Image 1: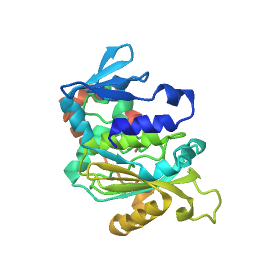
Image 2: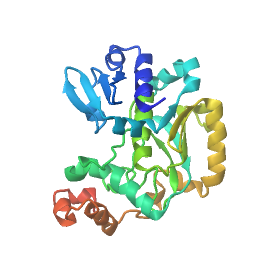
Image 3: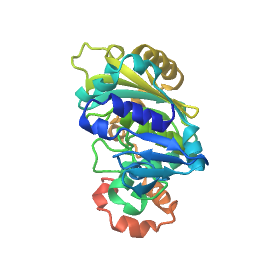
Image 4: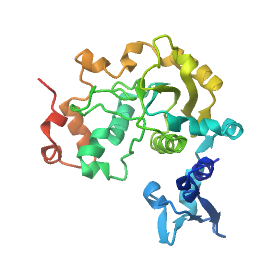
Length: 295
């Protein structure tokens, strides 16, 4: 299914009134342009969509076709809708991500377009059309006032992966949306995420990661697959063997403990200037403790 069919399905599974109100219906005119009926503000969510008023939205055929190039597979979840709701009871699910490395320049593009520092401190970037907002899978490589600092699912050298936690009470809808927009921006992404039912950490010291996994997200080749537990473990094991060397690097406090700075001031300025902005002017507006390395 495409992203719009996926969101309509996921919202219909949500038994709350919010889920019901947000359900999306769409139809095409004779020219292939698409019209949406939704009580949810789609123009805020999808930049190409035009708000026509009265809960009606418009998307040109060309833009719709570009969206439709990306597929979201949730076949298994049709048989077990309970999986979709299982995350709503977990405050901050622990996950592990492993992926195929990208080039250093591709890593730079990901960092400058996703790092949470920019959405929090530099409006000219946070509201820029090229910036991709994080929801549950954050990059914190720049901020010095975030604990631990200097980590994310992307690494400066191009390595992809982390052992981390999501934000509070994530939903499957958020997972699909977030990785859809990331994959559109960075089509070379090839990664798998194994999500557990642990709230930040194991329930007990004896618990094994493999036993706690409840579902997975597989991002690759213009496709986002929501995997059941069995398929998640198989894919995760494959990717961990391929790309999981030096596993300590995936821990959030690795760089901080070892005194390694991934994004130094010169790198940060390069990120800002890639948007055509003056880095001196923009950083002057930001508290120094948020970006200056501690002495």
